[in-house]
Image 1 (cartoon, one colour):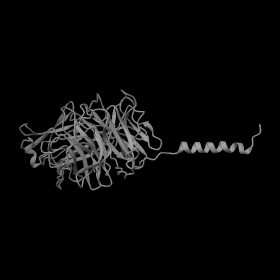
Image 2: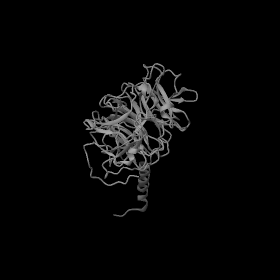
Image 3: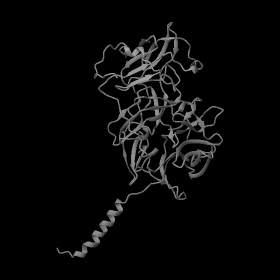
Image 4: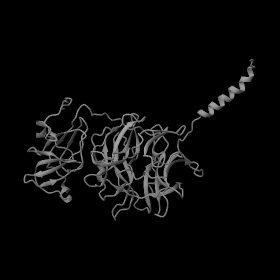
Length: 475
């Protein structure tokens, strides 16, 4: 069969046009990604320790701040529910927690903003929430640990962006949610003790490998944290508190990065209404989820810290409550911290310089005066043993790695002086130190060599006499 040359030209041009149109990518730069729910919103702590924001009938939409009159675009129309949007460092991808169908477990998903295609990251059948990007193509998220031997409800885990190499990084009977990644590379998450009795909420800070976990901030008035803390450009962290005491209003609060325990300031004291979330903008303003009264739905508005006022309404829907927002823009990648964890080592090491070093305000918290001569190490299933402290009040323990424990201090008459403290765990090969017991968290250690370091550390549990593990030089 013979073909004329110019018979192919229209076909080729058509193919090129179709190919070009199919490969054309969308641009969401500068748009605001919003999660909103058609469900009732209650400022409360989830009973099971999970994220209260994982509500049914939720969706993630995109709005154009330059075209507020235009209808928002539903990005998760194929999902029964989707919440917790997080933008990648290069502003090309979107992380979120979602249920594909009603009754499905909550999984972590990533959406390519160029074509809106989503891929699941976490395994089906496991409830996961609150994802956040980490440097090194990894993410952190909260994961249900139902039936866990450590008696935790939700723990923090990390994995590669393709879902491989899932690693647990919290090992205590606490619930963890709302992780945020700080510029220095650490993770700041909301935690709450689950066992042996429910505790108060606080922000816990830790490294992405699970080491150096410690209290960062605990609200003095037992206010409820409704979500993650966000960094501002001037060295502060901002977050929303609900149900504070009678002298303070629920709303947006800030703490300084350097003195988180002693710098809390209410930023919205003079504002009537309720807040659910806040996100700092590069301009110095914030995106907030806000309603003036309980009869209204939460809407997305701007908040100006300089004038302490809620201004422009960016999005409101009579059928939905706005949960949180994120801006599609590039942002600085946090530092990637080195890791000391060595899975060939089965223990960690912790040194206390002087167990009799107390915060002067400890007496006001019910801690009895007296000299500590012994500590008892408590695990989730009972005592792990008693250890005598040195004459200078120091002790050095070598606990099994990833085993939660708490410490109780005892005087020479067997009376409990303090404790138990918050749950502690050490990752394999982790080294930690503390100044005393319930000391001022801003206190620095004395420049002395503790007597305990001149002896071999005590293995915990104490009935374990020897552990076969990789030899590690103590520096």
